[in-house]
Length: 629
Image (cartoon, rainbow, N blue to C red):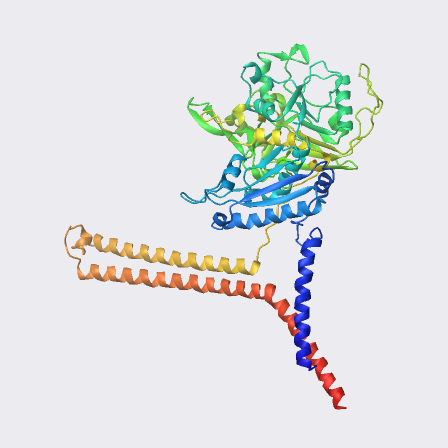
C-alpha cells in the first residue's frame, strides 16, 4: 500500500472515530462536564446538588420557548442558551430525578395555549410582534405544578436560585410557617376579619403562614422562621426562649429601632401589648442576644444627607411651605445594597427608612457577616430622643454645619454560622425549661438584622395615589423571610451574577471612535455658531437688506447668498469627515473582532493540523531516507 493511500485511509478512520466518540460521549457521558468559566456559570452549587439528591419523586421541568420569535430579540436568544444549558446540567446531575423537556412555542399553536394556561407570560419586543414565550413549568409525580412565568435576562444572577427554589417547592409544597413577635400594629389576620392593615401585613398573610405569638409567650412554637419586628418589653425568660429557638432552628428576621416613628404614633393611641400598663416603647433591642452574636446596637439615630427624602416643611421666617430633603428620613439606595446576597441583589428601587440606627459587627469565630445595606458617606449621628422631637430640615442644617460629615453606616446585616448562647449560666428564673439547653447552634444559623422598623410603614414606600410600591421596603422583608424559610441547602445559595468580561482593546477603540465623533460634532457646532454670529453682525451693521433683514419674499443679497453657500459647504464637509471618522474606527473594531475570532476559533485547529502534517511529512522523509540507505 502506498504512503498516500495509507494516509488517506488513516485520516478517514480518524474522522470516523472522532464522530463515533462524540456520539457515544453525548449518550453515555452527559453528566460529565468540565466548567472552565471564571464564575462557574454552568456548574451547580453544593446546595442545589443536595436538594437534587433529596428528591423523593421525579420532577419534570418543561421549558417553553418561542425559538422563531425569540430570534428577533438577541438578548433573549442568548439567555435562552444559558437557561437551556443550566437545565441540562440539572438533569444530568440529578441521576434521573429531574427530566428536562423543551417545547418550541409557535404562534397560534396548541403549545401556545398550553403555555398560556400554565401561567406563562408572553413578551412582545415591539407592537405587532409575535409573542415570545420563555418560561418554565415544573411538575412532580402527583401533578403539582410550579412555574416561572418569564425568564428575565436582567435576573440572570438569580437563575440557579429560581430553578432550585422551584424544585424545592415541588418537593415541599407547604407554605413557610413564620412566628411573629411585634409590639407594633402589624396584624396579618386583619384582612380575614374585614379590617384594614398595612400592605406588608397583607402580603405576609398572602404568601406566608403566620403564627401570631402571644405577648405572654414563654416558648416559641414549631415554626420555620421567627420574625421579630420591634419587640416590646420582653422578659429574660422570653429572651431565653428566643435564644434557644435561634440556636436550635437558626432562622430569624429581626427589626429593631432606636426611635420608631410607628411606635411613637401608636403610643399616643395604644399600649404596649407586652406590658399593658405602659405605652408602646419607641426603642427596641434584643439585648443580651445581639451582644452575644457580636452585633453592637447603641440606640443612636443615624442621618444621611446625600440620600435624604424630600418632605414638606415651613420656613421658620416666613411660614412658606417648601419641599426640602430631611436627613432623618433617607433611602438605602441600590448602590448601598449588597449585590452578592440574594436578599438584596435584585432590589433596584432601594429601601426608604426613618430614624434608623446603625449596627457594628464584631467578628466571632465561625460566624460570617454580610453587610446588606449601608448609608452614603454623608452622615452624622444624634441621640434618639433628639430624633423623636422630629427636628425640621432647617434645624438639622444648623447642627450639620457644626458637626457634619461622617462615614458609611451599616443599617442591615446577615449573620451566618454557629452562634453562642446569651445565657451561658443557663435558663433564667421563670423560663420554660426545654428538653435540652443549648450553648451553641445545632446547625448553621441564618439571621437578618435591620436597625429600623419604620421602613414597613406604608407611608414610607406606598404611593398614596396609585397604591403601588415606590420602593422595595416590603419586598426586602418578605424576600428575606422567604429565603430564610427554605432548607439549609436553599439558604446556602448566593447570587451568582456573571461578571462582565470586557474586551479592553475593543473598548479602547470604541472610546477613541466616540471621542473623535464628539470632537467633530463640537467642530460642527462651533462652525454653525461662528456663521450665525457673522449673520447677526451683518444685520446689526445694516448690510442685510434682503431675506436676512426680514423682508419676506425678498431675494438674498450676493453677500447673504455667499454666506449660505459657505455654511452649506462647511456643513457638508464636516459631516463627511464625521462619517469617514466613524467608518474608519468601526473598521478598526471590525478587523480586531475578526482577528480575535480567528485566534479563538481557527488558529488552534490550524496549528494542530499543521503540526500533524509536519510530523507526518518528517516521518515520511525519514522513511524514504532509510529506504535509500
